[in-house]
Image (cartoon, rainbow, N blue to C red; front, side, top):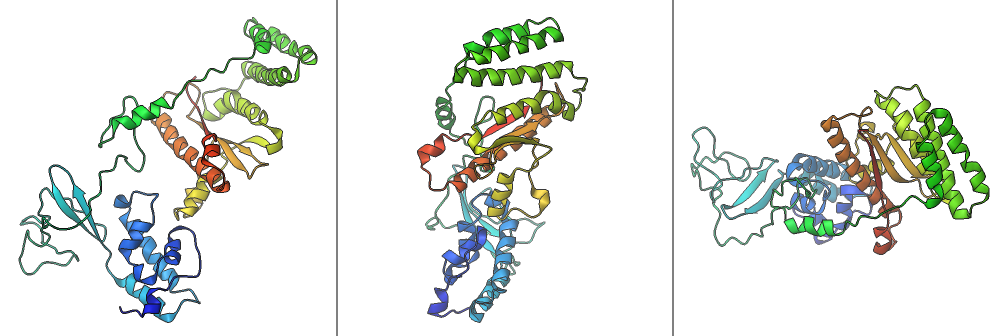
Length: 389
């Protein structure tokens, strides 16, 4: 379809988030599917999500045709692009095989030699557009020329956009071992010693022979608060709360053979103490009852991956800063009942928690987009996994 020079330079005046932003930053002559593929959906594995990208592209073009301020010629052009077949040309380069992958409507075929089409009596030879090759040139339709000037892309060092590294984890496919070595150099173990002012009270509680003696050990903290400095008072108040919850756990009749019982006795009380111990001016607090991780919802919406409420991330608990843009700071996942050893559940929660932490950090970066990198390096998102004993 032919466009005038003015129409070729046309850009949408409506600025949108997600993939639709592409049509506001690129001229109409660059609205082809290949350009859309290259400049959008950077947060997903494009090779595995061809159908989704194609669907988003078609939906975005259909949306353009509904805009009132878009010229009729541009709407017709959008319909023309909508009717075109979506074709991709990618390349593969390795020591055993050099060839071209032609992707038609999402079907990818990786050959075993430089000829992408093989003689096969059980299949029809097809050309680049997907139609049958009636000329009978089997094995030659997609022959790659040696001097073809096509840029190649390196093999990814990640699977599903996540670099896999660690002890006992296979380095395949083609993971650079130096990445893991450099990563481990950044890990420095820090010792956080229990303040000396609390030693005698903790020892008295631990050495108590029954619940009554443990309660009396806790009561010894109250007189000590009057004769301590400000720093010691803050420490002793937290220790007193923790010991009270420990006493409650030992004297409770709630069974821990369910996840709810495990949470009520061994997880929620201490998470509440942690939440309340943060600076009061940011209004910290712990919430329970499968609260929704809003950071994940926000990132999914920005990526056009949020479809309905079924896409929500329901956690087991969150620590939020209600006085600072409702920032989510800690994510809790409880992996079953007390002393649960089911590895599938543990592994699933660890992967789920990792993506939750990444969403929290990304949302913090979005909220404070003008902050320095040095400041952001000091930000920590926490994943608390309650599991085992």
